[in-house]
Amino acid sequence: MSQVIAISNQKGGVGKTTSAVSIASELALMGRKVLLIDFDPQGNATSGLGVQIAEEGEDLYDMFFGEISLSSVVQNVDIKGLETLKVAASTRDLVGVEIELGKKPGRELILKTQLKLLRASFDYVIIDCPPSLGLLTLNALGAADSVLIPLQSEYYALEGVSALLETINFVTQTFNPKLQIAGVFLTMFDSRTNLSNQVLDEARNYFGDLLFGTTVPRSIRLSEAPSHGLPIGIYDPGSAGGRAYAKVAEELDERVFGLNTARKVAN
Image (cartoon, rainbow, N blue to C red; front, side):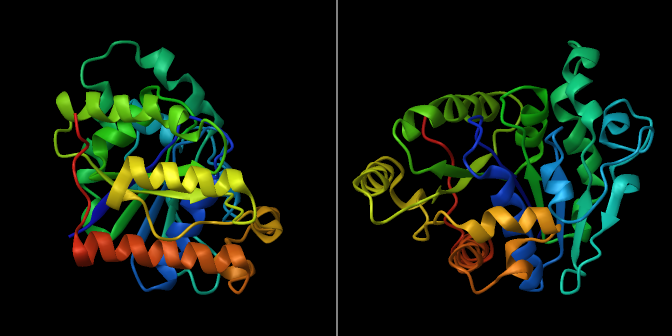
């Protein structure tokens, strides 16, 4: 059975898009069939895989208004080794979706409706959410089975994720009661600093078994990979960042299809 996973954190700069691209790619390298939906108008997940931003009239924006289907914007990724990875490319027009849809009934469930026709073709659908809690993120949470949360190893990290947890609870109480948290993992981790270790301890105490055992370190190679249009698993799989994201993907796959340890958010 396929799994739809939204990767979300409304705070920018936490490694959300890097995580979405890296995890989707690693799952594909493991042989899983993966669709990555780039819901961030900046389109960094799209360009990070060497895919062009979608053209006007053929993009996710038009999907929201019923002019095209989600399946019609899905593209192949032209990278050797990633034949089982597909991308629904972003478009800058997505910034106007919330304003133009206004208070249209059911606007939070448009993506879910579109995915019903498509998700059976994939093991995973990974959604890269924008760094906000607006309509695009609500659509992602409405369509998702679970949420994966990257948490930057910095001061006030837990306070910064509180708004997302409140939004997840709102979604479970309204239009997607089955939504769960698949897990939380630390990004930009530096074991040499007291701060990173303090954040790790606080996250472990707060999230318990929802916290992944793998942490993603700060890595120059992770920063370089998008400029080459490659995920870290292809650009430099042996780097610290490459090894870390491979382990995150393995942990996620085990939780989803193995141990099934994802659970609902506590009220």
